[in-house]
Image (cartoon, rainbow, N blue to C red):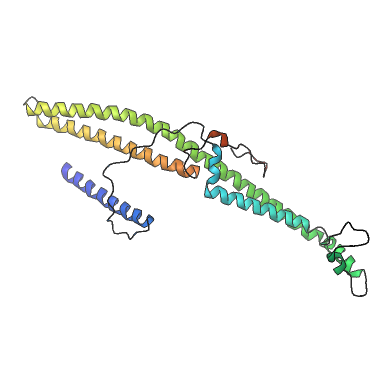
Length: 259
């Protein structure tokens, strides 16, 4: 029964591996034929994460770039709405002359009625224009709130990944010791069984515990690799070769702290 269950679990893992290989081939632009040969062992976890990683690295994240652009577009719309309050003419500093825009406002018989109409029109529409300004201002606040939320969410993901790295590192160190001790116990049990000093059940139980310890060690190493991927995504890219001096703690463009 135990052997049959183990064989069933093994087939389940082979199926998951086959599916993962096909997904990887699609990401590489290949036909999903499951012909890509995966490595039989996990890659080595990169060196420890250096201290002083610039917090401004998160600004590379696509979601933050999109949020920042939405905020910039909203501010631009508000500025455009405010400009609509003023007559659309331009004056020059030359004595006795005016811009072409002002000259074009005059009618053919040099009547000033057309000029007056263009000057008064924004005032008559002031209520509608101010309503548009208020709406644009509300949209500014919404865009700013979404931008700040996106920034805080990005830093939460970075902090979570950094915190998980330390927990997983300590767990891996403990499991390495446990695996070494379990392997030593297994070798001793096998030696005792070979000399007739122990029974088969004791040896098999020792082997099972050793394999379980090794499986747990492999699992935590996989978790560390996945966590490094999460950190890479949270930062919007790699962090090698970037100094802490590049950190920016304030975004003067919008007057908000971003880290």
